[in-house]
Image (tube, rainbow, N blue to C red; front, side):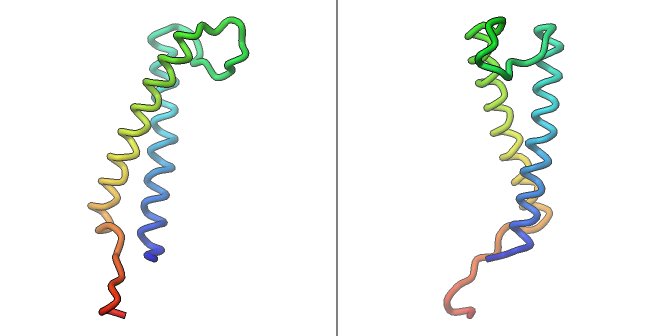
Length: 87
């Protein structure tokens, strides 16, 4: 288990999630003019808004996580695999 890789990849994933969540929320507010749907029990929220927000935020979060891990791999070199003949 490579502790350094775990720390770098976890940090990159957390940072990407935080930044993407803020960007998606700001973009949603800029496009629709109101806050993103966060409470599914709110009677003022339309079902299509919930579905659209879920699809957009999920796709962008997945992309951001992928790009963050790719950047972390370039920075750190990726996880180090232990082989039985090297132990």
